[in-house]
Length: 381
Image 1 (tube, rainbow, N blue to C red):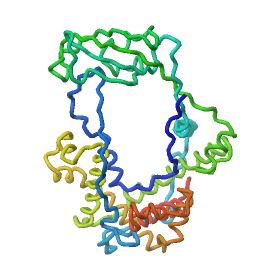
Image 2 (image 1 turned 30 degrees about the horizontal axis):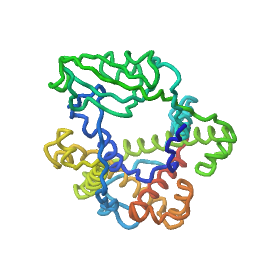
Image 3 (image 1 turned 90 degrees about the vertical axis):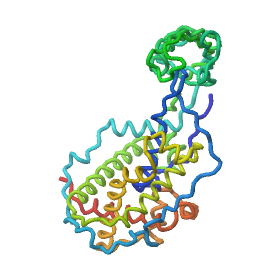
């Protein structure tokens, strides 16, 4: 059995700004408009770049994390002294807690490679295949070590069904016909044969969730001491998140904004673009590749498309800065240390400062302080 990579688990992601979230969402769809694969499964091979683009997360921020160029007059805050939150807005269902628990336990799953029974519907099989048309291999028609869920329909019609009943170690001559409207004209409408070797059936094994498991694997990173304690804390975190989302939606909907100068928005657009380029570089791609595959004529069109989102992010900064001033909240060394202790279980955050810059760290901590302050003053009814 092979242990899956667990990685270092944390309660919160530091890179929490909208600009970075946008970049992550954008890169997630990169290349979707390119449809020239001829393999039975539409796959994308990602090159691993050796270097990444540099991102200056402090753009548009003062050293204390507040928004640079903010004179305090761009927003008139609504009354936030006692925001009323309907109880139904923060209620968390058991199924939501279950989802969070399942997601957490997925980090500890292992793979069991089964080789002593036949493939059945619903199995995940690991296969090698070589596709030929009229006896000749064609581009994109071969792969090694591909995982395929039988019955998922992710491969060409009838491919998966022909593996049912065969055992690992067997080679199956899978015969298919590409649809007439297939994306690649080279194979559209043609008959093909895929010499397919079934390597093994992959079974995902999740460890039993017990108090002992929680203490051994989750107590240090999350502070959970038992299964019951874990579920209670997860529920509380979800309720808090619902409360945070409600108060922020309320503040955005009920505060009044003056026209936001472009000079305040552009730095956040820069962070978004730089973050996108950094993510692309990890895939061996460039911003130009992304613009082409996503249908943007140039970077300016991309910036126009996401201007409103970055403007909304600036509005949240304006609100947070004004609330912070009125409530005397500052991202002091003590507050930053407390933040990293609570959410990252560390007193040493130098590496985070080196990567994200201190202004961005301060911005994140200040946002968190304001959010908790607003939520603490709110009344659930």
